[in-house]
Image (cartoon, rainbow, N blue to C red):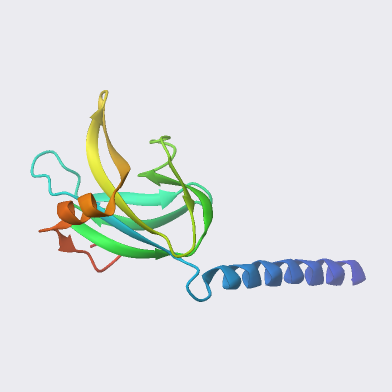
Length: 144
């Protein structure tokens, strides 16, 4: 019984430390700002592009065709982004994310061999703002 109690206390302490470290990461202005956008395509275009990270394995948002979205991202450091499902699309987009940084990411759908896959590209602010003109702002991260 004492062993089970010690294991439980140890687990709770580890979880507490993990939660506190996440809290430190997300406090204040220690976030990066991402503008994901997707130019409007009329023919053979998927309704949404799923954007996520490999580690941690999470979906950040679904981006609609012809839209843009501002996203505050709190996990800093090197991250590997992926479009769709990593098992299907193993191509990753690696970035070193710093607190207070702003990034513009263009998302497109391109043919790759016999497949049509989503692709991401980091853009300069001026170019991105010009390409985002006329696109609709997407409010929900998981677009309906």
